[in-house]
Amino acid sequence: MMNWKKSLEERDMHTYTDDETIHAFQDALLSWHSHHKRELPWRQDQDPYKVWVSEIMLQQTKVDTVIPYFHHFMNEFPTPEALAYAEEEKVMKAWEGLGYYSRVRNLQTAVKEVVEEYGGRVPEDRDAFSSLKGVGPYTSGAVLSIAYEKPEPAVDGNVMRVFSRIFNISDDIGKAKTRKRFESLVAPFLEEVKPSEFNQAVMELGALVCTPKSPGCLLCPVQDFCEARRAGTAEDLPVKAKKKPPKAKDMAAAVVKNEHGQILIHQRGETGLLARLWEFPNTEVPEGRKRTEALEHYLAGEYGVTAQVKEPVQKVEHVFSHLIWYITVFEAWTTESNVQDPDSRWVTWEDINQYAFPVSHQKILEERKEKETSSWI
Image (cartoon, rainbow, N blue to C red; front, side, top):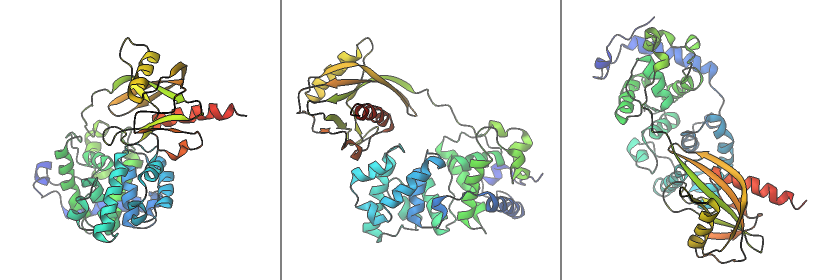
């Protein structure tokens, strides 16, 4: 088994390890990657715009989920110019279901700046690209290395997991200083290779072999370099402090219909959770209060609509990283067509698909629309 010659303390003082061992590691990893890398649509070329879009989509989202979204998004917005000047509602609709919607709003803002300030060419200067909205250290490193072959570390969860095991590092990967440490550790491995290939190879190794649970050490092309495997600590790494359990909220939502057969929907505010997405009217239910009573009071107070709330027709559970919504869905009826809330509107079932809803309310929409249309047959 090959050992790194320098201690971790020495590596952090920029002496790292010897060139021969680094080259051997690079050769083993890149050879494996050439035979095992997945054929993914954003890897067809090194178009910086496509790479950028894919990296934003892949944040906190699985590859298999992203693939159809990427195809659709690139069909809708094939160039930076197309995305920069698209209607926000159309952009949000194309992103619908991917979650973390601030990602796409920031992306559109940043791409518009690229079009207006850089002539539509994604800047290859690190400072310039990093200054764009929503571009953090990982996105900057990934795009510049993959699209422009810049020797920039791209340190995400996969990369930190791989190198925490390679070097047997038990620092908390949730801390910013740990990410910076890994950026320093990875930097020498980007020398004398194509940065695009090396960074993607490490990501691929983390996704396919050096997985969070039950890592495939016997299949790993760099197992001879792994200090954690030698120490028997691979399954204990990486270390990440546990988050607080998500807070549960009892919610009630209403599919409100008027006498014209239209449905009431509401657009969330400019900031905060699920900003600017559309939803059915909903409210948190105070402990000890009836859901129907809470909904009727909410509809009257927020929308100026007197509605008759029927029996519950659906239950939806949606988990965020910090929050769980337990939504009880009701149908409601009103004879009123005016609403006092300027961010709300009445729409038909035919038109409702034009609006972008969060996943929790997509579940409501799909089931209620299916019930509605099946009643016409």
